[in-house]
Image (cartoon, rainbow over all chains, first blue to last red; front, side, top):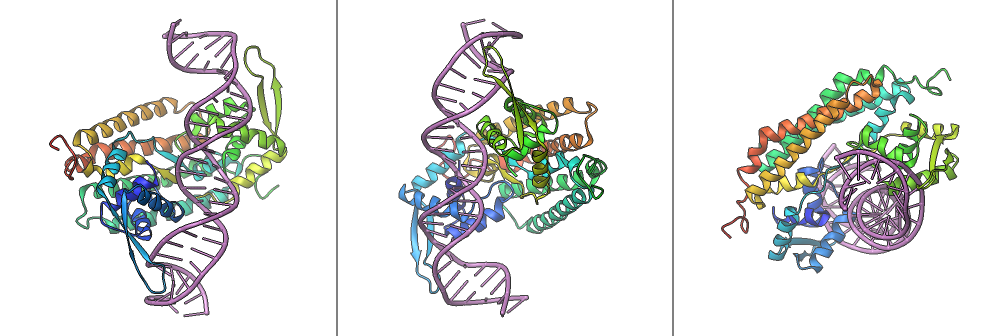
Length: 180
Length: 180
DNA sequence: TTATCCATGTAAGAAGTTACATGATTGA
DNA sequence: TCAATCATGTAACTTCTTACATGGATAA
């Protein structure tokens, strides 16, 4: 499963251009998977070569022609096959957590600022997700949105309750802090 | 921040070989960042070239010489600089969530199996983390371990409570199921 | 006797990101 | 007037993974 699968998936919700696919991806599950234009456009070209999507070019003035892609029957089959193959384990990469793990080497003010930023970020993300909720969404959409919300709330609560663990001991290692 | 930073960080906890660094990484934060031998060994070679780590070769019989790396003062400075630069946003890639989002195209039994597997996986991970807890750990270690635990518990609870949302409607899309 | 741990390293390739190139429209 | 939105695409590059190569010791 890769960006091509994502594109096929988004196209089950309706025909779309590369630009629109990217937007849909951001809305639907930016927190679980994301892709840049630099991967989406080549993916669509490749899918078209394989006959998994068809493309209608809509002339536009001032902008490049809008290319609206649609799933073909073969594309739908490929999507099913992709979804049926065992999913790879989740991959997470968090530089923030690395910073926390080694927070003893950072000035306390820096650790505090890092956590405050995070907290603000999660507050915002939670507000956004809450506002998107309950638009008579399909159940699987609600499932994914609610999942993201549950995780963000855990992040926020854990950070707020346990930040003292990293703040109290930051700036203790040699070579750090104002008194150097 | 990349694998080189991780290596420098692990070396603050004591001198270690590439092999040991990988093990330490797995124990400490495999859930937030991971690296393979194929990235660790070249990273260490590069760090040595830059003078950020030193290396002592310990002859061994039957195995390749064990190369024990140690942080140099320059290495410690680099680590501080790396930790001080603003962390990149967390990157998450979850094929499982993609499958859930498009679960309407999957047979119900498949969706159930996928979720059961996940649940088992989280149960195991939670048990492992719980057993590693409270070994008079440094506070920042406890923070990271507890963070992982909190997230895993949220995963488990959310899955158990809301699986019906994806199970009830799976297998409804055309071309799926036994009656094809 | 079979798998796992120990132990290092390389080479090929996958997969994706960033930056670049282009440029009209619209809202603040 | 400045930023964002719409709109596509390429090329260079980064970064990491996978598979390979090698092989003794130890535990089940």
